[in-house]
Amino acid sequence: MFITWLTVAGVICAALLLATALLHLLPKIGLAPLTDWFTRAPGLDLWIFYFTIIPLVAAPIAMVQLTEPGQYATWLLILLGLAAAIIAQMIAVLVWTRLHELANPAAIKGPRLVSQINRNVAPWRNHLAVWWTTLAAPVFALVRLAELFVYPPLAWIVHLPKYKTADWVNVSRHKFEGLVGHDLIWCLYCDWMTGVWSLGTEMLRNVESFWCPIRFYSGKKCENCAIDFPDLDAGWAPSDGTMQDVVDAHAKHYPGPDGDNQWFGHPARLTQDGKPIDESE
Image (cartoon, rainbow, N blue to C red; front, side, top):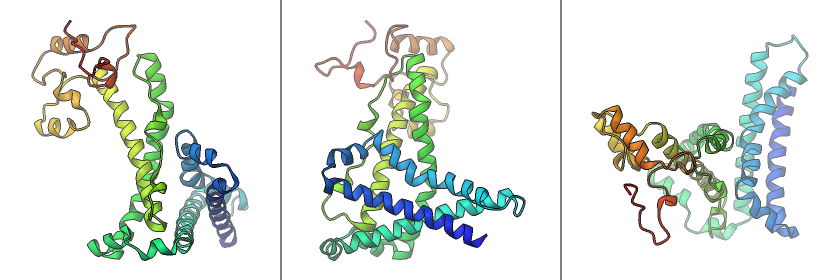
């Protein structure tokens, strides 16, 4: 079984490194436009799922398929497959990081973010923390799946606004001069996460204001949530109000069957001269 496990981990690691090499190669063979497409949704989605989710699915399946039936418990093979995928992903990141740093010797001799953070919290804390953040990658991937497959039907069914997701889900920090190796890979990770989370929050603004425009009883929760849900202080019914207040708030802000039901502060609610539309008229 160990040979099978090692084979699965090795194949996944090699597949990840080969894909990374391909991404570096595309601009050098005259395919820069394709590279640019891969830095924005939906092209970026393909690579994100290739690097993050597919190994976690493929490795357990491979372990089960490559092991003689009945020799080991299926759940054990699945766990071993997950471990093989995760270790392969970590090795691929470490190998790419080192190779990229070796290819950019001038940059690693200059000021670096990793060096500054190492001084700030100690190297072992910095490295442990960034690896710990990878536990959130599947969560962000699920959020992205919801943006792709859950929200669009809602937009069609109840006329919520549509979004050009490429304006949110994209990466560009690879263009920042001097950002190499360790700094680059983790900054790209943050680049992707920020866009995914911001788009998800934008979509939730529409959902929350359309279905439940009622302030929370908890004043602290209202204060905290108003940062991401500004309609809370700009139109939601008071928590000590009546259902008529809720109905009136909804009727005031939503035009009816033929209109777009965006959140109250959505840019589409502004006139061309930038002034808010008077919804009381």
